[in-house]
Length: 297
Image (cartoon, rainbow, N blue to C red):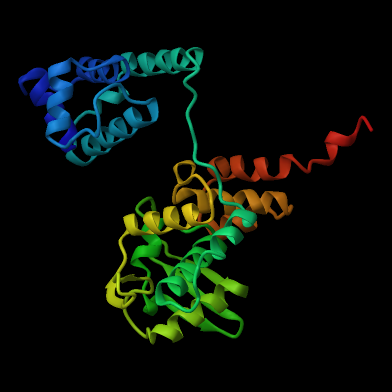
């Protein structure tokens, strides 16, 4: 919303009411190009990373923020206006005709995960932390980076064959429901080795590590989860730009599809409430081994 405030002030001197016409202008400006003065000022103010146009996915994130702010403030949502809806649909078709398809990060499937784990030095606190972080993030259902950053020892329950991790209700939870997921197999072994080695019995599970290699009491941030993943990707020889923290979540679902696991079982782990998002990765994983491809002989 700071971006919206800066844009409105620079583009319209803050005098125009934020209606559907302004939203259409905003979309056009960012897809086709802002006025040079406004663009340069937004960059200097630190509200925009670089000069130039933006992808539809980036524009849509800003529109989503506006819609949510409108809802919270009780103001009419300008994105709900019929003209805005038609304009966005037309722009989507235009983008596709121009070859500007939405880009998604590559999933981290099991083979990629194994390659990342080999870069972790298990003799060091940092290596043990990263090893446990990657395995727990992936094997417990593809956890979001915010969930990993705020996970505490109090939310862990020791099981005969591993752990159970209880996650607090997500920001999208309607019924204020928590989610409890099992951590078993080598993920549990790695987590236990990390906790025992660092003598962690309370507080954040995953913690910052100084350059000296000393583990701190302070937990890591959500952004740090992404940086850890990027570092391991580079060390393993992958192009880190092609992956993000969501790649762990997507890879878990895709690997489940490859191994013919039931979508309902995977969703119970990932915490997806509807199949519409999860099924895309699940289908992609199963597609390459589809027996129907051999019907012609």
